[in-house]
Amino acid sequence: MKWMIGASFAVHPDFKSHTGGTLSFGGGAAQVMLKKQKLNSRSSTEAKLIAVDNVVMMILWTKLFMEWQGYPIEKNILYQDNKSAILLEENGRKSAGKRSQAINIRYFFITDQVEKGNVKIEYCPTDDMIADFMTKPLQGEKFRNLRDLILGPQE
Image: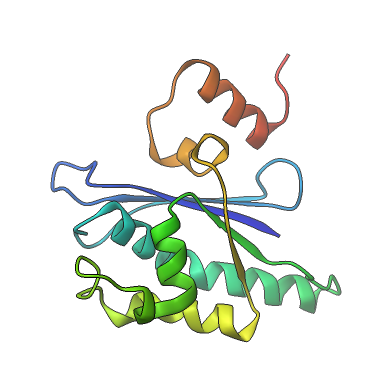
């Protein structure tokens, strides 16, 4: 399973960020999630942590559901395009710097899941981040490329 989770920082009139996520089993998007974040964040890194927290229960539930249906999940990968967020998600408070010290501990639930082996976090270049289709206004070639990844090639 491949999850791509992203966030657009402070895009709403009240300066709250927006979460977007997709699940793929190889081609297309099997599951899509869009959600306005319920609290304000102080940085794009914090917005990405909140986005992962918004989606982590769906990630874990989907893995268990697939296994209960008889489909063992060998790789449950969460892709992110923010290396600072990846460090915080994998290492928890150990990677927190001056700007990230005040981040609420609840956003480090993912660190525990990484340590247990329930999910693996990997870097995905921003240009390939399908979740951006759900969180950012795209146009032109980038819009068409991400649309084709989600829906399949268009003729």
